[in-house]
Length: 114
Image (cartoon, rainbow, N blue to C red; front, side):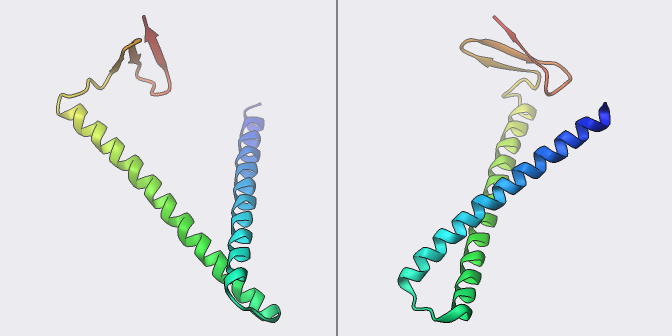
């Protein structure tokens, strides 16, 4: 049965990437509509050129957003690491107003104390 779990995960990943691809294509189409309002194009060659411009524009914005996403996560992780090593935060527990959350050696296993 282990093999079937991997197939399910692969299908899930494929579904997500397909959805992302469709969403990005819709964005490219909207960019094209906007560009067509402001630029004069003629024929299929002009339309192809317009599509290339829209695709490059979307790719640049998408890649910048991914880079910013990774940078923000890295900065948060670095801040947490610095606080942990600086004595500001205990690496094994987090405090909150509703109680303490202790973390076992497994990072995915959290237990709440009340």
